Image 1 (cartoon, rainbow, N blue to C red):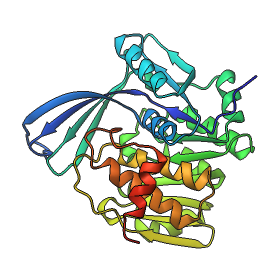
Image 2: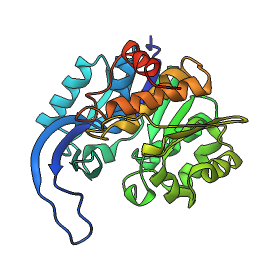
Image 3: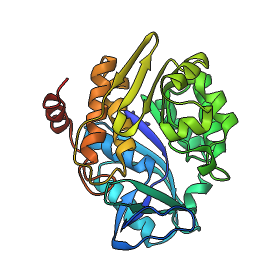
Image 4: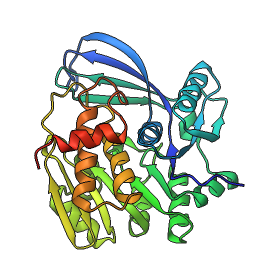
Length: 312
């Protein structure tokens, strides 16, 4: 009998090679690395871990390599309580990211392609997707995977949330293509993007982007705007939220923490739009106060306390 999970997350699980640098260099520029470290990451894995820590039953559909890195990634997901029945291994090297962070917590991410690029959905995968309450995917998923998810969502077989996650030029030859995003929009339970990704897709940002997305059938969504907060909409309501005023250590994983907050409170708990948005914004803000993608991903009680102490 297939286990019914709150959320099944599709995408990548990998290692982040983190470098603290003097500056994020412009083209032809340079920088100096003060420190380096290794941590677990990947959009899918980050969201799954955050949801698990919030008390949600979560599984992943990911493809790992055939190496020691893959062993470590799988062991970490297992320790976090993630269902691993749909983790597959290939003979490619494991995918990894190089994350360069400056003293203001801003970062640049470079991904080395590997096993994650070769993820494909099987009939076995689709069984668990159909049984889950929600399915979450992102723009880094291979286009054929996202396209199939769109078909399943259009047919009512799954309830799909999608985070564009990257400018379109960062997805070229490895992720979801523009035409596939176009086809997804009317069938999503939730669409999320940041300012850079949505501008690359629509040529617009902020409330202008919201208007375009609503015209294309997106009934519920969120746009993150960094230190300027976020915009959420659902049906006829549009809500602008300020960002938390925090001492930023590292912005890595902030978007993933935000998405997990929305999945947890808005989709699964059906909280009102402003309440869900404040919870998600608090999750992102708190995560920025810690080093690494997941160090600030905490349980619901801790985040509720953060929200209570955040002026309305």
